[in-house]
Image (cartoon, rainbow, N blue to C red):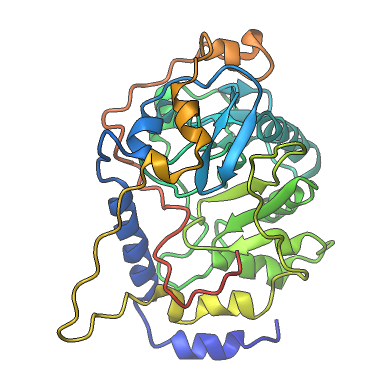
Amino acid sequence: MAFGFAQAFRTFGKLTLAGAIGASLAAGDVGAEQKTPSPGSAKGQFGAVGLPTQGPAQPIGFYAKGCMTGAVALPADGPTWEAMRLSRNRRWGNPAMIALLERFSQDAVKYAGWPGILVGDIAQPRGGPMLNGHSSHQIGLDADIWFTPMPARRMTAQEREDMPFTSMLQKDKFLTVDPKVWTQSRARLLMLAASYPEVERIFVNPAIKKKMCDTWTGDRTNLGKLRPIYGHDSHFHIRIKCPPGAAGCTPQAPVASGDGCDKSLAYWFTPAPWAPPKPPKPGAKPPKPPREMMVSDLPKACAAVLDAASVASMQAATYGGPSAASALTAAPAAEPAADADGELPDVGPVPNDKPAIQ
């Protein structure tokens, strides 16, 4: 780690409340995400659809600006996984994503010493912008995996709503992994997820990325797939490539070569990513608030996706067929536009000078 971490820590060591600063900034972004969208907005329209379209599965557009057709649902229960926060109705994805999750959950037991995975948000039934919590997860090729292992018993729907997140970070230190919580099995789980050729990126908190850079002694070939980003201290985010033949899917630029344990990581340990926006110059007009994303801002095909015929039921569109669909009933969400669990967004406040390293 010869790229100036020590200097970065000395520079930032004076910010004794840095952890609180980062948390408050991210919390503020969550609050912005939770504002009730207007009925005509893309969030409002895609968030109101309960079932996917009929027909073939296709991701349309980019991970953070798109939609999808022909989605399938991850079964709420499997031998090596449990789906969480069922009331959100976000366990839909492209079949390639769902197949990977099932395979990953099985391999986690075999090779990572993990008892099974807890799967968080994947996407809405037709993708598109979510009502709250994420800027990506729009085309069915993103999925969140909790750092909490699957318990030995099946949880009820209410337990899946209420289980709190467990952060991997120390509360009283800036960007520092808690040695009382972090385990080698979690490191193995991350590197297993990164080993699949279709996995393009895995988003983790910068502290977790640094921990992996400092301590991973196995094959580092796929370490560069772990990308540091705001949040992601209680879960990690798997992103897969556009599937073969998905002509309407906009790919992301490939991850740079190397293990990512370089200046792009050191950046996160400086004040720059956590600094509040600069105040406007005296006399300058205040910036306009960001405009709501409308359906017309998405790829043109997404308007037709909203109007397309639905599948008959969730059971009919569950991956593996109706027999794989769980009878577990989701607890109703008291307020769909609010996250009581305080989940951090995928992307927090991003300063203008943030390097394009993701």
